[in-house]
Length: 123
Length: 160
Image (cartoon, rainbow over all chains, first blue to last red; front, side, top):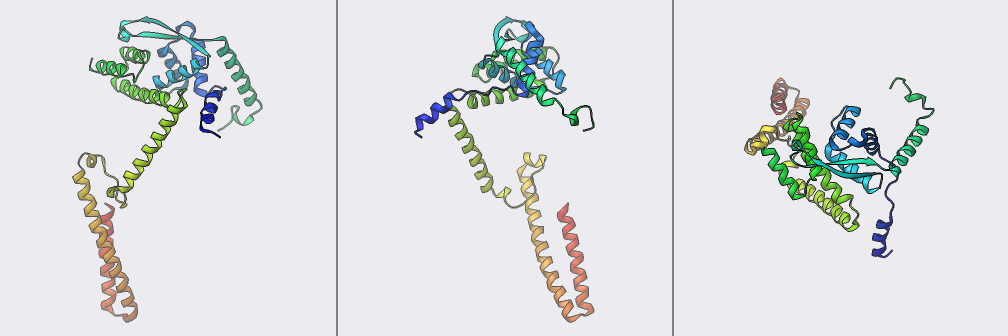
């Protein structure tokens, strides 16, 4: 295989289609927060759900990936004094993003179905 | 204020995005500690760098970054392998000894010296045991008992 073809294959490779666990959490937080979805409340929402500290950078990394895949879109908001004059970036799920979340939910529901070992029993 | 100056510097370097820093500053104003801030900042810088290098669209950049990472791991392993402090089975330095390497070296040298003593005593004990079996005199048995006591004492010092 010539070297140039190898790079072409890399370019043509489709990005992973399924949402990862963390990406799904971020997507759900964005949908839940609706028009108030920017970094701070998204991070809070995930922290409250998982009961553990979340790195803001990892939330933004997931948001960037989701945006590159067209699942969310963003717009710059107002700059406030408590942010040191820096602007907020608001996120919103696109219709494709909502479709993807529904699809992931369906797949997960199918996988969860009939698993008596994980339904309220002892670990 | 000192923190925010450093944050501005990181922003100008391109290590962190304006919105990420804005979110961090906002949370500090809402009562988060400076320890939390710096933990978040450095973790975010690493994640951002990793994302730029390994998840970018340019395959050449990704490959170059992977090669550099592999080379770095190899060189680190090579350095560790060549460093005499790490290849003798000596104990790792304690926190106070990391700050004062001379203290660590002193402990290592004393330990090695005693290890030499233990080896010597062990060989002497073996020889005395063979002798005691062959001659079976009270004197040779006493010598074995003495050497066993000395060896025990040396081991207990070594374990400290």
